[in-house]
Length: 229
Ligand code: CTP
Ligand code: MG
Image 1 (tube, rainbow, N blue to C red):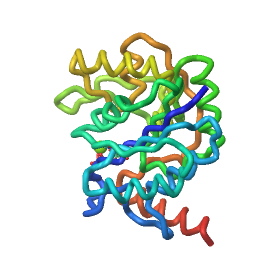
Image 2 (cartoon, rainbow, N blue to C red; image 1 turned 180 degrees about the horizontal axis):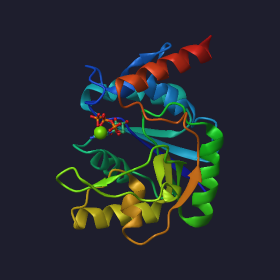
Image 3 (cartoon, protein in one colour; image 1 turned 90 degrees about the vertical axis):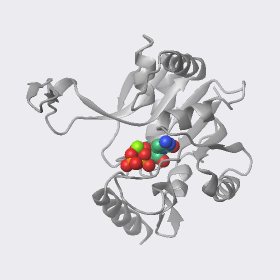
Image 4 (spheres, rainbow, N blue to C red; image 1 turned 90 degrees about the horizontal axis):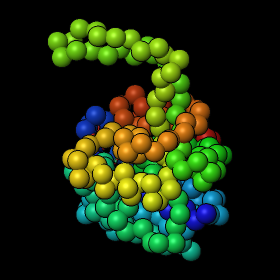
């Protein structure tokens, strides 16, 4: 099955607190976006790559895509106010030729290609699959006053990562329903879950963390510099 990759890169990186948006920070000679995209370049089934970004970064992103994917169909689309809007804009441009779509955050450069392959296989046979890791901390549910309401059994709790891979028809249907019902999810799987389609978990590893807070950036710099040595 032919695969499209959507990489949302249009966020402002508020929690990191840098002037430059996270995907365009340089570590060990390359932008974080390039480190991330490279993990997908060995995949023979990959047909299309779409990156959502802000107008200031359009040209820079086009150059990166041309260099990394010279013989694939690549394009840059305008980001939206929310991650979900950025992905919707990309989803709207996919060609009819692709059967599967992978969504992967620009700021998860440590994904291993072997896990992407596992996720593709699972999505191809079952419709939808995501990479996740077992919850490390005990998770609490609070009420609005900040009082703990419940403690779900940690055995059943997972931290969702990306890639999240879907049959294109399934993700399109989920995005249409979300638009109609005005739903904003924090990941793509949640939109698919709510239309009643099954999404399977694949256990990945903790190296595939999302660069979100300053500590994450320090760890990423350390790991990438280490790898370059
Ligand atoms: N993203 C996007 N469009 C948005 C918001 C986020 O394309 N409107 C992208 C980010 O660039 C990032 C990925 O979605 O690659 C994951 O989002 P997150 O880590 O939350 O990044 P930011 O939204 O930039 O960070 P913050 O929430 O701290 O502002
Ligand atoms: Mg965000």
